[in-house]
Image (cartoon, one colour):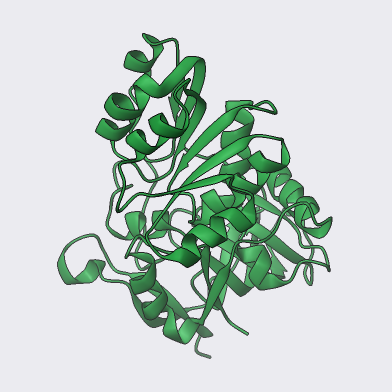
Length: 327
């Protein structure tokens, strides 16, 4: 009997034509020891997915096997468990994120496999699959970066690239803590309205105004923190650095910070890579189901149109989150 197959958005390598992701018919992965099989209901799209596809993590020490199905964020149902699995049972609805095991079986597919110790948690009934898939990497990154920044009520935070996935959650979490949020956004009026609707006190059109000049004009005494989600090293370390008060904190998820240079200004800085935990997913679910966190504006695509979602994601100008679905 022929092994069952499924549709999956995959690549065959990191060179030439083979590194172009395409929807393919591939064998349905089966769970090995310590693994679970997940029927994917929805999968969130992140910029990191396309960095993986381009081979930018090929030197990270993680093994790669081809064909490689992309996708890290997932909401779905456990359909089978491997030997030694005791964290989940078949039939359970879960969500979270998992690096493709040996970088092979990701969530842009009808089925995937993941180790049981991945950042996965039960999905509460009050959280639908599309919303759950829009949370893991971006929501978790927002939680972790704000935990690191340790902002206090009354402080001022500039978020560079505020209307994407991470920014959508970071604005809300910071504003709820009494922090004054300055959000950069594209020229479209709806982007500025979106940021303010999430809790931003101020917005800056980064396409028509210099961010540093705008911050300096509005805050001549300086600001307390920067969360850089989309900036450049020059913008952060040269233009924004003089606006930071002594004791300020800086986090960059795009690795634009120069921690040594900023330390010389009495500014604590870190280039941040999010390492997810199951507890982060539980925390996000609790925040959403209790009404303390709004899911980012989400645009959904069926898996059959994932190439369109891919094209939209790689423009770098997505408001909120993109999600692909199998339902």
